[in-house]
Length: 313
Image 1: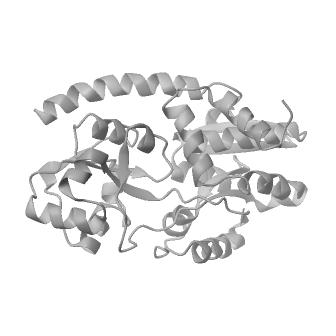
Image 2: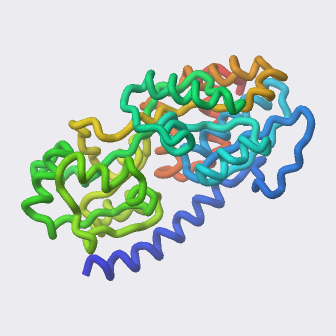
């Protein structure tokens, strides 16, 4: 019954996400294939999920207010936006310390925020990539359950989840995106660290944005998510405590090409204006406004800039 329910749920969810994509795509955004390099233009990139689109929009609006001509290249995958930065198609975007360290520099994971930031900043410097001041929020992976279900099962931590899974291996359906199942800091590493294993037939792979809705709709019992996602609160979900500190730190940080920063050194100050005002609470709220209230991302970004005194109404 769960798998049949899952099939029809995915159809409905896909329609919802398509509508959301149209909404968040509004504004001065372009696909990378349409980019024409213009002298003096700052090209701001983003990855393909809500938080990244919000950060890109906040950055783009603020830089326009500061007199820059800005072009937006949105909704790329992690490797694509990094390649675009390295090849000069994108001038800056927001990256996460854990991704920069492990995916692009093939280094071991790091759970200490300052160490992760220092390492990746040092490793990327010879490549002409500058990591500016990081924001005070960590968008790491998190394992989620419905609050009521977790309470009934006595699960608060990942150690509790492992103990329950080992005793009731067939009782938990796990929802995950494909990337989490394949990454070193993903499911296999998590299972090894905590000493349990979801049966293969109990793992349902889906797009990252579907895991929250599938959990809320009881298609799955446990799912992977991201710590700053607004749907955690909106769907009454609870993140299980990573009591053995398995997941790396993923502090959001603006990264920029060195030659761009040398031409316009004031960009460091402007990006600091943004990063210094972002924390976990504010980022969760921004994500909530887009994913739960389905508000226009340009309007939300401008409101945040006004509220924080960075631009006038």
